[in-house]
Length: 114
Length: 115
Image (cartoon, rainbow over all chains, first blue to last red; front, side, top):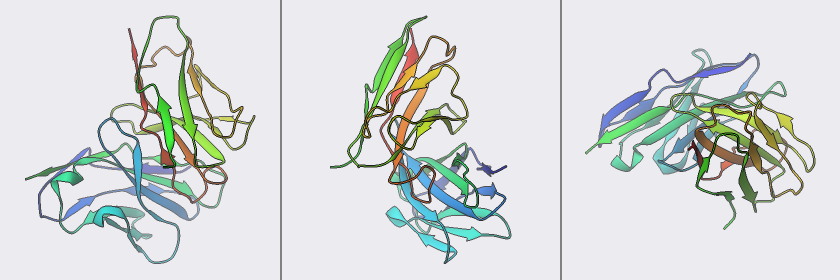
């Protein structure tokens, strides 16, 4: 069975500081990993994905994520946070080796203070 | 611009009433999905469809029904059998086969509440 966990319900960061939103996963085969962002009363917007290749993935709005196979993690990072980054972030995973569905984490609310 | 349009944005249901949420896409995507979002629970899959006239149940299909008569349309009906329908409903699509390595495109959701 596959699963994904976002261990922090909320992350608070000061503007200009680096931010990290954590995600760990469990799949039987190789993972497809995704990060999405959701603003209030809006749908999810795709930020970045890891399918294969380079462990450091760069995405939209200056975000990046590092795939760590040994720690089964895919943490989202940004070197310098903006107030406009405040939103709800979702990690999602799918097992590439089976006809499985995509599983979404429970979400992490990121709050950037000026 | 291509995208997914969900309507209405807000919907209210009376006890014993069926309501239908609209989802239309002009992305020419094959696969479409319906999710339910509750606070602190992430997204849960209700139904998904790969092609016209074919759809499969997701993890929480009870009390819901769908149809896929046209490629661009995937309406969701919340029936009176769904006892706790208050939630934010999201429609999504992907270009090719269901649950590929392509990211999902989402609509802006419909918020359903009980009167």
